[in-house]
Each structure stands twice: as structure tokens, then as C-alpha cells.
Amino acid sequence: MKFIGPMRTGVLLLMLQASIAVMAQQTVDGIRIRPDPEKTRLVFDLSGPVEHRLFKLDKPARLVIDINNTQLRETNLPAEIAKLSNAATPIAAVRFSPPGQENLRVVLDLKQEVKPRSFILKPIAQYRDRLVIDLFTEDQQIEHPLQGADKSDWQAREIVIAIDPGHGGDDPGAIGPGKLYEKKVVLSIARELEAIADHTYGYKGVLTRQGDYYVAHRKRTAIARENQSDVFVSIHADGWKTSSANGASVYTISQSGATSEMAKWLAEKENRADLIGGVGSVSLDDKDDMLAGVLLDLSMTASLSASLEMGEAILLGIKPISRLHKKNVEQAAFLVLKSPDIPSLLIETGFISNPGEARKLASRKHQKALASGIFKGIDQYFRRTPPNGTLLAARLQANEPVFVTHVIRRGDTLSEIAYRYNIGFEDLKRENSLNSNTIRIGQTLRIPQL
Image 1: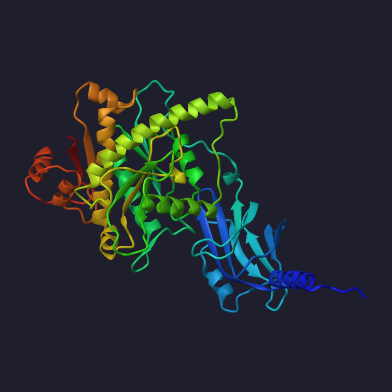
Image 2 (image 1 turned 180 degrees about the vertical axis):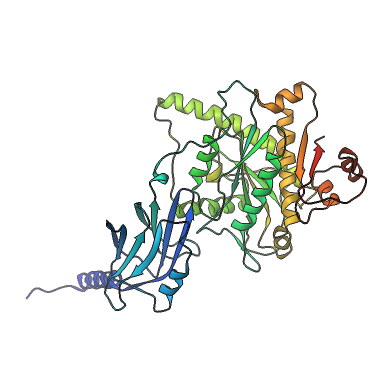
């Protein structure tokens, strides 16, 4: 009989415990279906790590997902899934294997053929283990060129502002009092900024996401690049360890790291969110190492200088609207700002973790005022240094006035509009030949930009 020593016995016990842990049956605690313009995403919230496989069946079209050693949580989860609206997805119905089985089988009845992709996400922040299934329809498997300004066109073009609402979808960002989600607040501010840009002569806004879905950080900058953007602005709302922190901040990329302890902490918080959606890359493979290094260095130096100058202008633009957390532009290693060929800024519009600022950030009036202040800073920078070949450059050279057009929406008042665009109340009335303070929904106002 062979003797097994204490050390080897301990190793065997550890291996046995690890094996039991892997074999322990897991549960699916929730399923979310999220359509977006590029795909339909299913997220299975799990009690622990699992193994899975998927395969397609036809006549009729189905996708089968087998999750080993897993059961559906013992609630009315199937009924909850049945209530989900699948009208905007290729999914007609979701079916599950009977309870009590060792493995869980999920069958997706499909309206059309799809190309599936699956991957496992490890626990991060408030999320546990997740199984992600992405479904691509035939149309979504084709690369569609994005419409944007073409810098190779000799005709005068618009200045393109890429506006990035942070977070989205499975990444809610910071959560304030009353379950105020950062992802929703920043999307509202971004839409206001896009509207101002689109109604200002010589500008165009491009959103990196149109709704509540996640876009990987590298994809956000890729959208800006594909649209030939002149600046990339990422909108966020701070969360901090204590509720007393307050004020807005503007960040640009740092080549050597963060410039303060808070900037470093924030950079880590934002960077880790990219694990939720996967990471892309920017390639310089067609250049030799020396040339690629020189081009990258020159581009980063130029865009960093422009980012710092524009950031200072934005701080001045939002100073009358919100207390500044830092009086100068901060620098930190935010992944979303690493686009060397485009001036890039990250704007923390306030602390959503601060009850007072959270109330302001939830206010549509404050959201519009912030968007106006941000645009004012961007516009001031480009009016000092208008890009060659742009409509703004041509108009400024001709000494023609620049106007913003504002379409009246429900809840607007003349005094609020005057404050938003930093123009005198009587000047606004005089410019639009208004004899009273009465305005109507749909009415268009001309607002001079001084």
C-alpha cells in the first residue's frame, strides 16, 4: 500500500474542493434583451461561472443555447421573459427546457437568419458572471459607411463634433439618489449638445450612441474618426466615495498618467467599464516602427495642445452654470480619450453622488444650460482657430455674423433661452422682432453668437 503524505493529501483535498466548486450547479438569475443599431444582445445573469455551447437549426430558424450544470432560477422568470418586447429584434420567442434537468437549454425562435456570437464576462463592479449572446442579422453583418464630413472634399464643410454619452446598456455608470442613472443623464445632455450644434451655422453633431445600449470605448473613437470629426467630447457625471464632492471638471489625455489622486481614481473607474463590451484597436500596421512612432507622437502632441486649449474654453463656458471642481483642465489616462488624431475631452458635468447636484443633473433646464456652456467653449475655440476649408472659416473671413437657430419646445421661456445662449433678454427680443414675451411651440428664433 502506497503512503500518501500530509502535503500531498492537502493538495488532493484542494483539487477535490475546486472540482466540487466547478461542478456546483449554477442558476440563471435574470435575462435581458437589448436591441441596438448594430446587433441584438442577450445577457444571462448567472450565479457563477458556466460552460456553454450554441448551435443553429433551420426550418424553422432557431438558435439553441446549452448551459451546462445550470438551472433557471425558481421564480416566474420565464413569464418575465415572455413579457419582453421582441418587436425590434430577430427573436420571435424564448423557450426553456423543463425544470429539474441537469443542464439548461434555451431555444430562441427566430424571425430570420442570424449570425450569433457568444462570450463570458467575469464579475466586475456590481455585475456577477454573465453569458452574452450577440445576434447579427444579415443587414447588420454588412459594413455601412457612416455619413459625415469628408475632409478630402474641397467644398466648404461643417465642423463635426463627436458627442459621446458615457456608459449605456449594461454599464449604468454612477448611480445617484433615487436611482438616478448616469447613463440616462449624460444621454440627455448629449442630445441637447447635438441639437445646439445642428442648429448652429457651420457645425454638425454626431452621437456615438443614440439610445440605452453599450458601445466599447474603442468603437466610440472609431465612430468619431469615421465621421471625420474635428473634436471628440465624452459626457459623464461623476460618482465619488462621499456625497460631499461636487463641481464639474474637464479632462484630457495624459501621456504620463494622472495629475491628481482623484483623476487617477476616475480614470481607473472609466477604463474598467470597457470590459463590459469588449475592446477594439487602432492599427498602424502599414507603417514601419519609426514612422508610426513619429506620426503618433506628432498627432498626439497637436491634439493634446488643442484639447487643453479647448478644455479651458469649455471650463469658462460652464463656470456660470455649475461650480467647478477644478479650475484648470485635468489630465488622466482615460481609455476613451486615446484617439491621437482628434482633440478629445472628457467632461464630468457634476457629481451625481451629491444629492444637490443630482437634482440639478436630473433637471432638463440644467441639462440644456450645461450643453449650451459646453458648446460655447467649443465654438469660442474654433472661432479663434477655424479649421481650413470649413464654413465657419469662410464666414469669419468674410466678417459675416454667426447665428444659432433655436426651435421652441414645450417648457421653453424667453428668459431661459436668453440665459442659455448668454444673450441679453431685450437683445433676443429685438433680434427676432418680438413685441411681447409670448412664444409658441415650433417657433424658430435667431440668436447671434458674439
